[in-house]
Amino acid sequence: RQTTCKGQMFLKTVINTKEQQVLEFLLEHKDYYVSRNKLLNTIWSNDIACDSLYNCICHLRTYLSQEGQCLIENNRNKGYKISLQPTL
Image (cartoon, rainbow, N blue to C red; front, side):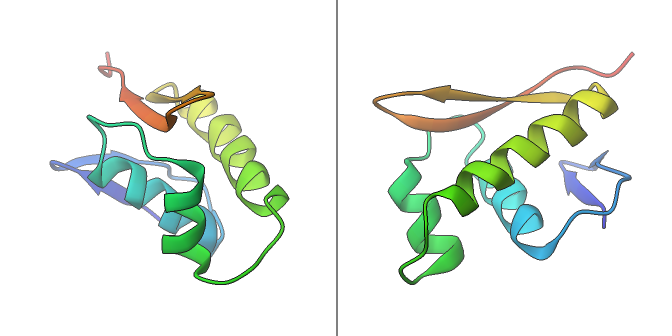
């Protein structure tokens, strides 16, 4: 799958549906921290183990670091935020 933000392509790697949804949600809200609960309620919309979100974030960080394009930050009190890095 490929995800774009303002015409810029991210991830040429194959990712699963939940990872795709998390990445797209973070890109849509790229200027803001998104709480863990907001991501869980929006993407999964039912009771799941928080490990699923944690695993998605870990996988996305690995994929994105390989692409060298962006970074997923986390703040204990605020949530997750994606930072776009310019491509050279």
